[in-house]
Image (cartoon, rainbow, N blue to C red; front, side, top):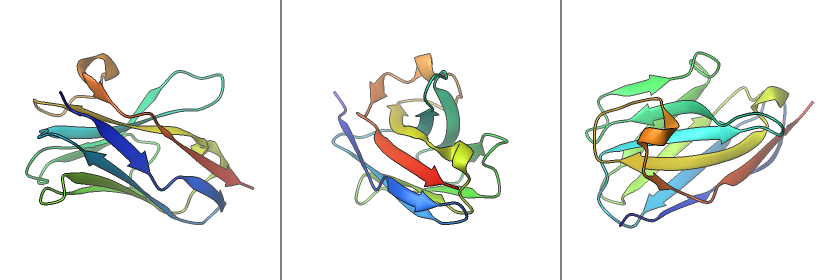
Length: 120
């Protein structure tokens, strides 16, 4: 069983930056970030494989967000720059013991989420 715990959310002005962290209790392979805005379905944001050599981003965040990981700390990060009000959402960390995918139902392990609010 893998347990995930996100941190780093908060309130930031548009154009600002935040870094989210997700600490995992067990070994994982692919780790991803998803987000859910009020009244919307949860959507894929970014994912990274075990080696850190392969990453994938949603078009809406590519060039602004960077996913990375520190396997010694069993932690994955999401550096979010040039934040926009439309990035406001609850951000969830997810993990799976397989290759990168964007479909949330293929991730069996989930954190509780952390709120990110971007003011205009």
